[in-house]
Image 1 (cartoon, rainbow, N blue to C red):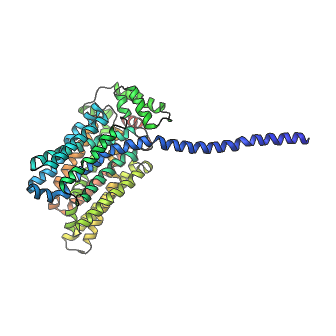
Image 2 (cartoon, rainbow, N blue to C red):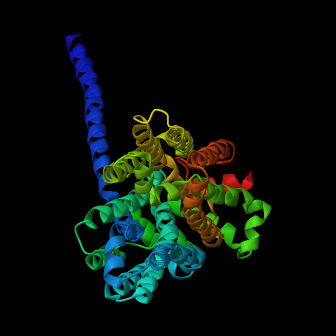
Length: 480
């Protein structure tokens, strides 16, 4: 009897032992899986870093003219009209870049488009550096503008195509963060360097990008569209890691590409077919909401707005630049948790509030009321506005644009959306001073109304794309 009990006890112990061992193994396996995921994502992070060097180059171009205005006018003896042309021709270059960006990215690949853009920016900076008169300055500014236009399309599209769905929003938002950093750094170091030296500094991110492009893989979705099956699988394997099973993702991408390839090649007029109309409406509509809410007028004339309200312009501009970078970085951490729509709605509400506060300060100043409070009200309104824009409306439209277009129309549709964005940037910056002359508080009331309509558009039309593959997003949009 005792012997039977001993045997039973031993058997029970033997049965329990594996359970304990299994739990330890599960814990060890979990740690190993986490470590493997970290290792596997190194190429994703490196590829994103290389791509957003283009975004930083974009920001450096955009931020160049503000700190260098007085020095360039004095050294090269430019009139106000000549310098205004130098400043504004950037936008026209960007519009040309936007028109051609989709075709270039579709024809020579996403990496090829970034190489082209870097070449134009580098040539532009060298032209500005060697300029002795307005002609080379304008040629250089036009070339850097063209590079900006191509970068503004291809960088977010490339990141969206290489990123896994759980990281896509955050990684694509880094595009906007690096643009803000490029602008802010140009503002700061532009006060320390000569305008020619600052032009040479603008070449640095282009050089880093060109070196990095020799290391990173091409977009697997573009390779699949070109029918390069081996290169497609090799690129996806490098991006996901050697230990990752890519068979399901590869099959999903390949099936979707094959479905799209059965459709005729898209032209501009094809974008208005019923199957594509919703995605085009969303992409273009978000660009309209982003630009016509007043961002470029407020951005380009921040100093004069602070001066008009009685607040020190240099202090306000520094606070503005720092806040923009910090809030954009915070938005990048939230976009894949909170989702795209909530960030856009909250951002839109903040833009309305910022416009109303700033408009109120000008209204009180014009009426001679609460003169001591108006500077604080103006700076609060501007900072609320730029904080709200940086949190959502600055980055998220580019994220959504990179997600919603099927790959067979992505080049044409993306070019259209980018062109609308740059046209809006030009239109708002051009009309801002005229509107302020008409009515300073009325200008901000108008922008508040546009941003309120943008909130309605987002709620009614824009879908949530968080946590879904590009193929799932595009199929759902174009099926509805």
